[in-house]
Image (cartoon, rainbow, N blue to C red; front, top):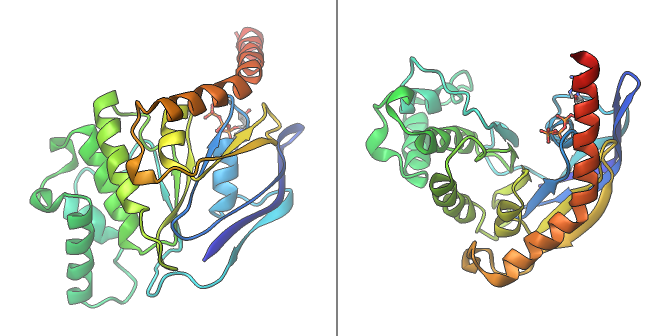
Length: 263
Ligand SMILES: Nc1ncnc2c1ncn2[C@@H]1O[C@H](COP(=O)(O)OP(=O)(O)OP(=O)(O)O)[C@@H](O)[C@H]1O
């Protein structure tokens, strides 16, 4: 299954936020979206996931989702969004309820996704007993349980410390390393350019608001072989920053102006 952004444009009232965004992402691919604060990255992700309707253009899906997919486009958020009164297993089971699955099918899915996210030993644990990194692994396990074609990820690692981010990044790399027609794909919104070059096949660099695709950067190195201190990747991240720098400074000034007016 492919997700296609077809000339998407959007505004909130008089505020234009996105302008003519087009790209596609398919099985086993990661498209990262980077750009200065407020350029419309989260809005674009919401439009792609069908949570918002764009003013112009469209987000469309081509081809079949993975077999038995309960939700082809599934979000993973920065704040994990777990229910504190449910165990790890209970949080995963939640998204399987109400779909008419047998108990055995649910059990098998829960077992499978907890194993893929290395949470098997924590099935009966409650979120508050877990570190931030493990909570986000629960968030990812829950997303995988519905057999998505694509994960739509909005800053999924930004609430975590640097070491935990590095470990979770290894997990994300493993998750998207299949190349079958049913392999998982990702759209990955981030401020962190190191994450973008480590994970993505293509990086859409958006301009400041209204976000336009200023450049699409392709990274061809084998994802599993990429290391965060690899000089080639460090250089690519620096090049991305050079593309964004002027816009980011301008976007910061605009935000400061708004705060001054509000204050
Ligand atoms: N529901 C909404 N109603 C009105 N304005 C909104 C709404 N959602 C976002 N905006 C505005 O649209 C612009 C783009 O917001 P968005 O969150 O998509 O940007 P972003 O690139 O994800 O930002 P950041 O990098 O700071 O997370 C911002 O100016 C924001 O204030």
